[in-house]
Length: 100
Image (cartoon, rainbow, N blue to C red; front, top):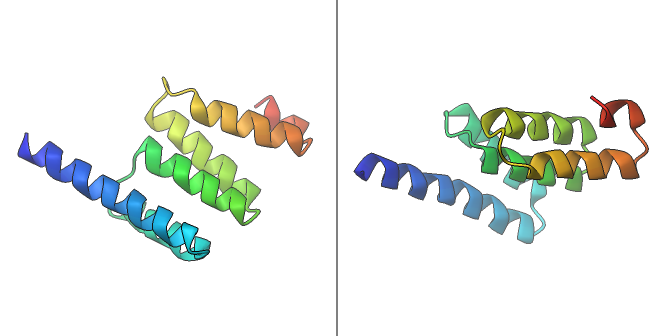
């Protein structure tokens, strides 16, 4: 039980820190924080979805789709990354990628 609690605290620390940086306009730093979480093995569907949102905020559409795909792989039952990607690619008329 203690290990799971520690993981949950660390997981929230990554997300909270990234969201705080993004709110201050430091989107690049927010992305770096979450990429560090992934690099040290703290990858989760929630972190990947947040990375996708942040990448989209700086118009990195390829990175956005990559992180959506990773979120789908990590939690196939979560429909949010499918909706995120479908919405963004449709609005941008990237039809070939919408049907992938």
